[in-house]
Image (cartoon, rainbow, N blue to C red; front, side):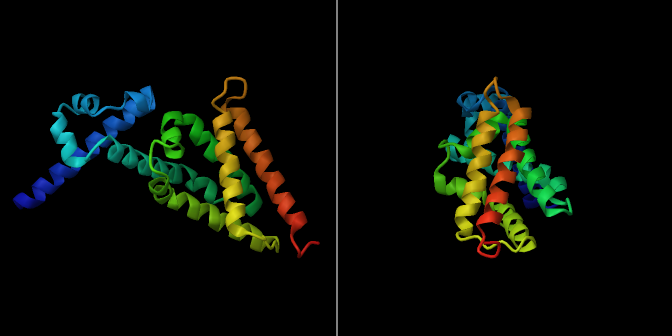
Length: 200
């Protein structure tokens, strides 16, 4: 194997180990516990080695945000294959809230101000694309004309994010939050059907 190829592979492996260690710390102890020194200790490297891969903690957290969205998309894949569009919409709503409950610290950094808003939007692009595709398929299936498609997407996304946050409250819990997500989504869809000019 050429030296350059071996070095590239070693660098990729080191980066993957850093991300894995950072994710473990984040998932178990929260973002405040996430320091370059602690990550370096976890992978048994010096801090400068971590800085060779990530300029600072913010760059590393942004990578975790992107990783979180990839993980979320992977976990939603089965629900996205449900053939009935109405059931698919409700399944994806409840599954996204379930993900938030299973990965509370990761979900928090995916959605709060820890990362710059524009960077966060870029990382969320696959999830936003899935939501837009879902809403397009649903509206076509029901002959619903949405007055403002982008606003409708924001309403669904905001509603599910808010309900996911509610799920972290002990008196609500994630299981009930999943039920609320399905009910809220069903209410939104029925409202758009009733308000559509086609059905007026």
